[in-house]
Length: 264
Image (cartoon, rainbow, N blue to C red; front, top):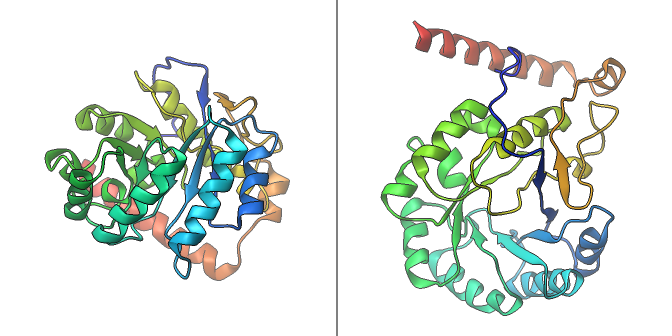
């Protein structure tokens, strides 16, 4: 759809975004929040393999101190907890004020169980984008918020349709793409009728480089809706090795055949 110039009807000219804090030490976490992006919402990664709840507590505490009491904070476990561990961790981390908890456990069934046991809203990410049936989250009443990522879910148009079917608040996030990919996420977020939460699209600074000369980065906590185009010199400088290039070309060919078969 991007190649054909598809653009939905937009209802906003910029998108409110959060900064993302990886599973780093408290000092580094505070520096990320205090960087000159203007974001007053932070998403903090937790449940990192090899780390403990104490590590998460220290990181989340540092982020809260950096944000101040008026900032919003959500945590993302990427399905790293069991139900029991999730309930314990959420109860402990609530001390710092949580907007919501993203994907605390792996399965939809576990997500529903955690939702029954905690008072904090839950957001589903992997339970939607990696699911054969993304609507199970809604049918099983397993989450309060849907996290949608354009590329894994098949494009802006598909995500708009899915958001309508899910009929729950949506947070648009990136899958760590360059500005070319993030632009599609910004387009989706700008087209959603309601956007009550900051979106996870301020991620280009996490890359070592980009493919555009003017990357999509937040100003005063917002990313403007605008077209971007790859710069040929940057594309050449970022060219992958032959093995990686061949793997992705093969994957694109398989996707093209699948789409063609569906049309037929």
